[in-house]
Length: 119
Image (cartoon, rainbow, N blue to C red; front, side, top):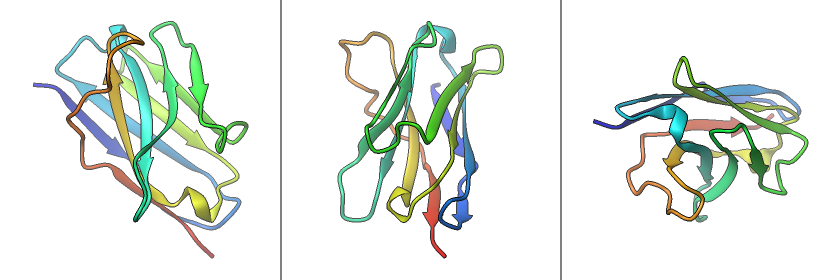
């Protein structure tokens, strides 16, 4: 059974940092492209960052230079390090997976982890 469990969210002041983690199980993690999405209230879910099995990364323009995605295949985790946080980063953050670039992201989502950036 595929499971993706997100953690690490919280309340942080603007300019602060948070480290999100996604623990994966039930599939061959190292073979998958992993990603972080986010969804703010009243907005569509958006892709924040992705990382391939070869550690190639891609970021949304809005987070480039502030967020870093990484993975640990031995621990089956994908991490999103978020620095210089802004109020507009407030959202529910989810991780997801797909096996090849041309595939769609998995249509099953976890519970996510809430990030709130506010003074």
